[in-house]
Structure formats: C-alpha cells, structure tokens
Length: 333
Image (cartoon, rainbow, N blue to C red; front, side):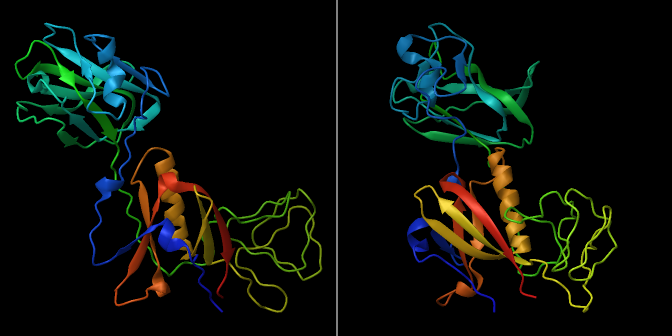
C-alpha cells in the first residue's frame, strides 16, 4: 500500500506556497560574492583602478554595508573600474549597484559590465546616461549570459559631475531559472539515484532487477540477456537482463518511487514521497545550483497532502538550508 511520509515540523522549516499565490524568486536570490572583510578575505579578490584612502578600499562595496564610506577613486580620476575575482568561474547575469549615502554626483553615469576569460575582457552589459541616483537606492541590471567567468568588473567611463567616482555597494547574481515539471507517472527501469545499492564486485545496468536467490562470482561482469533460476550460480560473463523474470515468470520490482529525506541545517529532517521523475528533477536542480547555476529554491509538489480548498500546494526547499539528503527507492508494482 502506498504511503506518503511528511514531517510534522514541516510548517516550521520550509515555506508553503499555494497555487493561488505568486512567488517572487528575487527575494530568494543569493549574492554570489561573500561578505568581504578585506580585499582578499574570506575568499576571492576585490580590486580597483585606484582608492581615495584606506577607508575607501575596493572590498567596501562587497561588505554588505551600503551605508559606510564605500569605494571611491582618487581625485581627478575621469575613468575607473572596480572588480571581483571568484575562486572558481561562475555565471553572472545580473548585478546590483547602490549609491553612497552622500555625494550622489560621484555615482556612475556610463559604464560597461565585463567578464574576463583570462586573456581579454568581454562586455556583457552597457549602460549610458544613468543620472537618477538616490541615496541608498539599489539599481538592478539583468542581461543574457550563460558563460562562466572567473573575474568580473564594472568599467566606468563617466560619472554625474564630480571629479572622482564612488559606489556604496556592488552585488552579483546568477538568476538562470530551473523549472522542473513534476509528473507522478514514471517509466519503470529509469536511471538509478543516490541511495541505490549494488552487489560488491558485480557490474549491472542502471535500472536492471536481479533474481532472488541467484549468485554470481565476485568481480565477474554480467552479459545482458541471460536469466537464472533461483538458487543457481552463474559463471563469469553471465548476467541478468533488465526487466527479465525468474523461473516462475514473476517480474521483480523496479523502484518506480522513492522517499527523499532532506536534512536541514538546523538538524531536522523532511521526508517527501516522490516519483522517479520528480526525484531526478530535484537532483538535477541540486547539482546545477551546487555548480553555481539556477534558482536558489526548488518547489516540491505535496500531491495528496493537499489539505484545504487549494488546487495545489508546494513546499520550497532553499538550497543553502540543505545539509544533506538521502534517497530510498521502493516500488508500487
């Protein structure tokens, strides 16, 4: 009998979002640059064409404090740039600039946002005649980019009238969406997922069942197409066929569903009963986000746990709240 497991503490751990509500993904976006405490800590390198004083260092725009002095160039600097170099290449397709709390005429007016391939700078975005700056205002700029660069910079060619440039904060994001389509139906025999087990030394085809009681010689490979009788042994080179049956003609389970157990950073576990397609979509999202791509959240359909008058319910798992996850496959056949 199919069972669906959900933790009683789920309402306190993850946000439930109903189909009738809109969800603003920008509220969950994560700034790719860490909160810098110097030009090189905790990671990466902040640099600039010049700095007005020790209190206006490049890292000041990356310290998550837009109300401090920020970064400023030396006097009479008619052009200038400020950059951040990641430890590993990442995709950036959006950046946010915040003006300093004073001297708005020092704010950039015209510039390009560029990525470095290690040899030259590639222009990813161009802005001209940006004059409507307000104190502590965040201006967002999005563009199309799917290429990973290790270093990005804001290359400023003019400001709004002062003899130097300044900036209060500088943020970078990757907002490429990951939009899996959950589907309860799956095809038996699909690829295996974390949590599946195999016999030590044996070689199998992902998704293939084995016959109860059969044994193989340790370390021997298997040849697709052969079948065994319960209790019989096989010689090196023999194998079981994906989807094959034993001597009484009964088919074996293929593991068309799985229990996904997500351990959050506060130590609590969440359990979801998912189809193989939903599970694969979750793993694909997790791998993509771990590589620096895609949305910071993933929607999991609650299916039959749809209590209330709603057409559907979903729970949004936040990537940076996940400590680990475990997959346990089972079959409804």
